Image (cartoon, rainbow, N blue to C red; front, side, top):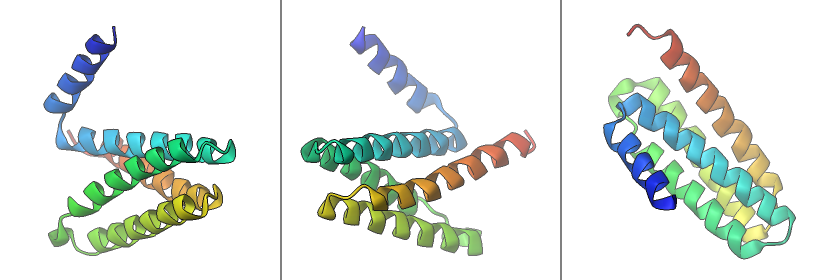
Length: 123
């Protein structure tokens, strides 16, 4: 069953439009941050570290994929991603869930805005 789920997810990613991939990345990042936050609160520091690093890896990829030619919005997103990255590193080092909350608020807001932009964009 797990192999079937993995194969489905792999196909979903390979055939997705770029806009959909970004949404999948945001969703995965938020999921990893929530899981990492919960693990921190429960004292499961090793699991928390793994989850927060996975979230950091996604933020790095999102930041690297920004198109500088998009102008001010790319610069603003880059700054937000840098802030999120800093909060996740801080949470991981200090074993404190507080900075994850700040990072989550930012990523959830960006994700919601992205989904709304896709919804109203002409097809």
